[in-house]
Amino acid sequence: MNRLVSIIVPIYNESNLLDSFFSMIDHLTYPWIELIMIDDGSTDDSWHQLKRQAKISPDIHIIHQENSGVSIARNAGLQVAKGEFIVFADADDCFEPEYVTSLVNTLVTEQVQLVVCGYTEFSDISGELFRHSEITQHQSLDVAVQRVVTHHCMCSALWNKIFVAKIIRKHQIYFDAHIAIGEDLLFIIQYISHIKTWCEISDVLYHYRISSQGTMQNYKTVKKFDPKWLSEWQALDKAEASLKDALENHKFNLETLREKRLHVAIKLLGRIRKFHYQTVMKSMMSKYVRKNWLRIVTSSQFCFKQKVKAALVSL
Image 1 (cartoon, rainbow, N blue to C red):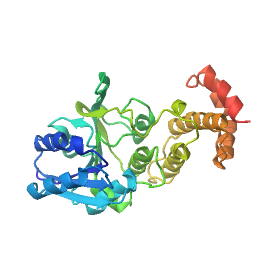
Image 2: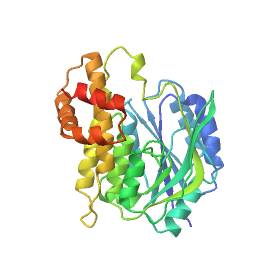
Image 3: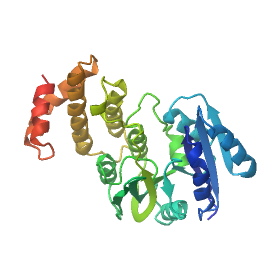
């Protein structure tokens, strides 16, 4: 089964992790791999390490760009990818030797267009914090959307999934550089809107490292509103629009996504109120909450505190 897989990896100041990452790549059991590593303007020794590795590893394609963000880095990888299938990984995480083999074998044998594997979340201090492992077969695309937007399910991350490159190219599915939070979810939802079949395997193949220095900074520790937070709402808005314009033979059930939008709107409106931030998006989100007020009040998915907050922030 000599089908080339492109593994796209954005890099930013991860020189201390690259040796370990290359070791994991060397131990992968799938031999037909094209490794595309994009240095996003690192200020440490990452780029020099990538150049050294590229000299001894002919299957590595390295790209250097000015610091532009992970979305532009991944788009650069997609532009040059030659693989029939696409996998996204991060250099600070870990994966099993069978990571790519199991994803490819399932994609081919099950004749699906998206495969999702099990994963763990861990920290260097506390060890394993969460594990997800489940088999999902012959389920509708609505189930896929529901599981993507549901926290601690098959999740909205890229790294435990394999994609068909032809579908990405045909429908011009790329990462939105203006979305800082939720860009992965938007990409996956846009991809799902153009496929017909998917499945999930129980094999726990990927291990996501939780870092205190990550993008999702705890808003309680900051002193002012970060405009990047608003992109989470924008990502969900664009995801819903993508599903509405999906394949004619499938009308998506948007309820789970809309419920997620309500949760995010309430959260962001609370932060806007706390930090006295001014944005035109405030009126849009307030209108959305008011329009769905009855649903918030009657749904068990919203706790009493959220219902009170919704009443306050939607005024």
